[in-house]
Image (cartoon, rainbow, N blue to C red):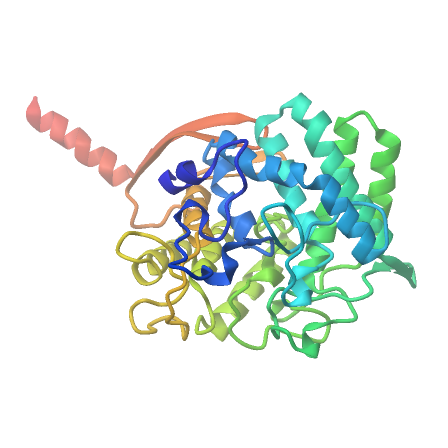
Length: 407
């Protein structure tokens, strides 16, 4: 959280891969020190919401907003339609930088960025922010995605789909049907568009977005849970847990619903079966939040511990690769990026407090070894501030006996 405060000011640029700690030593920093919007910027701001640091989160919101006109021009030039999309790999001024086209120019980047406008509203319930920022941004992103999709046999489809970094830059990285990554972001975006339209007293528009949402196909699932795409199971260890977006961060699947719970559990078991050999540090910290949403607290805590002990330098910065000789990953290199640190902080928050779909859970996923737990002034959707303390019956009894002994 100190790192977050050090890198975030409402009117400063968003957090780049290395932010204020970029050191080029006369050459370019890792990945050019740019804005990677296929997870790096998004994960960096996860802890601002539950962590009650909405002011720090404004740096991402404001940076995206300031690039809105330029991003609309990019959308019209590259995709040939009206609306708003964001380059997956961007410069300080918001220009596309290129790279593997599947994610550098992906069609659902603005959908993921739009979640941060949505969260900023849901966690603050700021009516002015809804009117001036959240509604316009989410609306324009939804207009773009509606314009680029086509109806085929009654279902709305993307011309081409992909899942970040799956099959890297090969031709096999493209899919003719929705990947679960693109599909879950589309489902989230049209759901959010309907909600902000309703909250803005635009019921007719909200109904139109609901109609578009119903045209989307179901997630592709089988006995392995969420696949990458129809006909493509998760067939090996993979660093970007994109197929599980519907579990976290989008919270479209809820473990408290029977059918969703089956999908979630099967997806987790498949990820475990394929192992972590191709994971980077951020994979472990992201996975902690996914486990927390499944109420698998001990597994979540294990991911956090692995990240902290194996994927950080002595001064606590995330170094991407396994720094203890490849105990958990085949990646043993040392490029420094920040998103793993920030996703780690959110992983801790998810153990303590969760909110979604109109309900709040206090201590939803506390590991069994944590006999005493407390937190102060965390924030939930609906703009509630929560503090809580939890003690086991054994600890309470022990303290009672201690007081009796003192008497």
